Amino acid sequence: LRILLHICAFSLYSAKFASSLIQSDTNEKSRSPSLKIPKNDGKSEKILIESSPLEKKSLEFRGGSKAGEIVPSFSSPKRNFLSHFLNVEAHEFPKFMTMAVMMFSIIYIFTLTRDTKDTLVVTNCGAESIAFLKVYGVVPAAALFMLMYNFCSNHVSSRLLFHMTILPFFLFYGVFGLVLYPLRDRLHHPGGALKAEDHPLAYLINCGRFWMFSLYYIVSELWGSAGIPLLFWTCANEVTPIKQAKRFYIGFGLLGNLAPVASGLTMVYVAKKSKLFNSSSNEMAFANSIKVLTLVLLGAGVITVALYEYVHKLYQKELKDDPLSEHATLARQPKEKMGLLESFKFLSKSKYLGHIGLMVLSYGLCMEFTELMWKAIVRKAFSEKNEYMAFMGRYSQTVGYATTMVMLLGTQLVHRFGWELGALMTPLMMGLLAIPFFCYTIFGNVEASRAALMKAVYIGAVQNILSKATKYALFDPTKEMAYIPLDQASKVKGKAAIDVLGARLGKSMGAFAQQAIVLLSGSVINGAPSLAVLFVLVIGMWSSNVVSLGREFRQKNRGGQQRREVKG
Image (cartoon, rainbow, N blue to C red):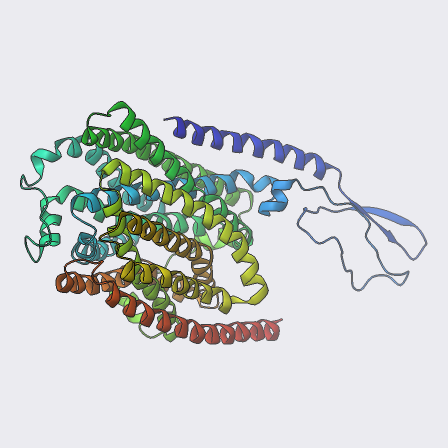
């Protein structure tokens, strides 16, 4: 509750601060600069002009009088620190902060549900069960979600589609945390979890025995695909003109990716307090943690919906104030409606989109090969649920810090050295970080020594944290940049298919491979040598694909630049 109050206070303070900035900007604009224009008769007159802080301070006039060159002289309004840092003008702050806090809220919910689902499944069913859930649960659910979303997008407005998409998620989370989880002992199989030696398919059977936790895992995986990729970015692309998007989107990432820090602090605090007030029973402490986190999650959902409605009010005001703008014209154009089958037929013809899809597929495979094995090691080190949840909370908190730092460095890297090096940094970083993790897991005797087990936990934590930070800071921006040279139809249809189904396909292929390894070796830790070989092969394929995509990316950019020069 305290965190929710802080979020609300932050939103109100941002709006109040933006209003003061607007007033300050208005006062500055009231002192309009003037140009002294010499005439042929030797006299001069003053012409008032309007200028924004972001306009160039040098003007060029052609076809002037013969009296001489016209030289403007004026002083531009001063910009405050936040305007310089975020590159946002004062009158844009309400819209920018609303969208940034909305992104923060969605990522905050995603991080809470991600850590909770891992705690529920790993501590009850075993980390190896995740491989079965992703193949037989998440992939069919994602395909069904895409069919329903595509159908609804062709028949309802974007605002109604947003509410129809987000409402079922929070209804489920509310029912699960406040109704189903307290009845878990009555609804689950009384026999409890099976061990690997009890049955060859013990981990798959455990998914059925703990069906509520499996369902929570599947829904939370869908939220990861629907929250930011579909709900937020669809809203952002709809209400943000191109001239604002070039400046806003970097700021969204910087502020939004602080959400894992807040989420991690929340989980650590809740787990600690629940343990303190229920020291006699670990199960009761964890049950109270679930209730509190559910209430926090629902509160963040209400904030998300309220911010969505508010940013649309700001957007409608912009359209009313400037009905002839390019964004207003696009908003009035009818949208092309295409079924799912037609979209995939269109995508199959593009080699360029195939390269982007292979990037997403490779990342999903590599993360699946390392993350699941690391979670199995963490499960051995932290067997008690509240301890596991607190550790994952600290992990998410560190991911947020690392992402912010890498994002600040990554923007300079892409700007100075180009797209290709920025895109290559993710597979190179993940490959280098995975070497000590696989070596220590294979040769470190983690099964027999507690000290070796804890070292493997923290080596894997560093590998996963920096891999995710590099993904958020470099992989995602370079992937989005790869869509820029494409035509509008390829951007819309390609992004929808690649971001939702492409990512799921990569994770499901990795899960299939791990299922086979688990069935043959008994556990994912015993199968670490096989996973290491597959990991190296995927890293090589990924890097080669980035080089090919970079070559086509440069060609398309040169072609677009030549067309603009000819058109100019």
